[in-house]
Length: 287
Image 1 (tube, helix red, strand yellow):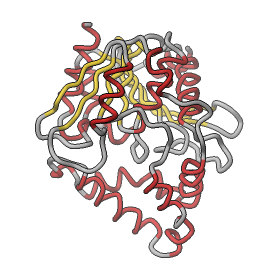
Image 2 (tube, rainbow, N blue to C red; image 1 turned 180 degrees about the horizontal axis):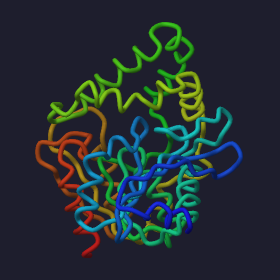
Image 3 (cartoon, helix red, strand yellow; image 1 turned 120 degrees about the vertical axis):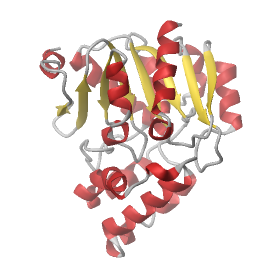
Image 4 (cartoon, rainbow, N blue to C red; image 1 turned 30 degrees about the horizontal axis):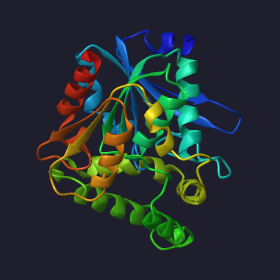
């Protein structure tokens, strides 16, 4: 609790590393006052990605708390850690316990949504609701394509290193967007900062994510997610995102579920139309 009190001394952005064990620490960003909204980035995200959304949340009277999962953003990248989505959910829970946060709306992007669903049924006292930003019920931290790419990880550093990673991420941001005008050189720098800081550790962590199997499946537990869930889907054609099959699974299993369409947006709804995210948080709180 004292960590959260320290972070709220002034209405400014406070970022700090929170040690959860001797080898594991996660980066946390806190700003604002009011009801807590916890932001969880996806696999290639970070607190930087929420730089436009956070001021809108604080202006709306919420306290914004970003928790970057292990191996993501500025958080630690221990090679031999458990990078399963279940373990990541438990780390988010531990961070919120340390911060004294309860009954938060969790806004989670892409793979982060699967962590949020696990958090909700494992620690229902922490989650008042979930806003999923184009994130479905993933059963693993990596797709088949991601696992295939990680087999080439030793060559990434040898043939191009950070420059190659930067190029790939820039292309991914553009292809996944409905309106890619937000993808500037500064933005690409922000999205690659974590990997660029220690590319070797990043690649090893991603390999560990690709190889890790979940200790338990999510789908049999979706009915235990008692809080309301709102899924935001961009209507523009884009790479990645939730399939129609995954939407059907969520609709059939979750007790309280709604889908909001965001016209013109792609996968990065929080970048393209952050006001739609704030509106979803408000609707969820009102419910």
